[in-house]
Image (tube, rainbow, N blue to C red; front, top):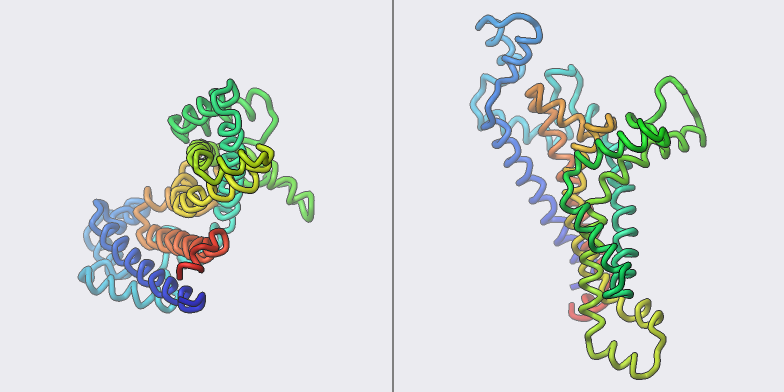
Length: 325
């Protein structure tokens, strides 16, 4: 199959996956307990039945579920994600205002965890059985088992409150009004703690996976042949072992993107990071269904796009796929 046909096939599947996610999320959200009209009425201080009926009529909540689903699907296909009851703003505006902050955080956490995890995994495999191997794998197990919110709280307590090295909250200094490179440095300074906190769990996963994959490849016949020919160990690791051992890590990393976005909800809440994770948390408490659906849709689309890109990149990472095709 040529690359254009492969891309079109994957793109078609991705569109159907996103549509399926939209329908499933809509049904699950509306089956959950809670009435957004009652929440709005409570905030307005008016809980009489007449006012509740008026709110339900205003936002289309009095219509049958299938009618609401059809109206929502038509809106999504036309680019309209709905209207926020609570914020009195279009959902698309709310979500896309917060999306860059989440993409910045998750992107940095992904690069940090993948790079550090591969380096530590290579080191542990290269020094198998040594004290460094034991230390790396023990640390990876600890960070894998530790709850993300606890790591975030301890990071704030140690590095912000006790040591004062890094800012604890928000994306940039409030009221500083930095511009240019000063603003970039300020955002990077605020980005350190949430990036490291979110990335540590995935660093542990990539470390263990890289080590296991490298040890498996190191026992294969072509590696033994290279050793018998006198090829230096460092060159064997770099040119032969790593190129084959990295394939499972690459595959697993593309799947982990969705979990990164999910972990960003806790991280953004603890660090008051103004992303869609925090927006989703607030919308859940307020029963703001359109915002929840909008966040779920955009998150699903991002995950599908990343997995589509990884499918395409995999053919460059592993040329044998093109050969077998």
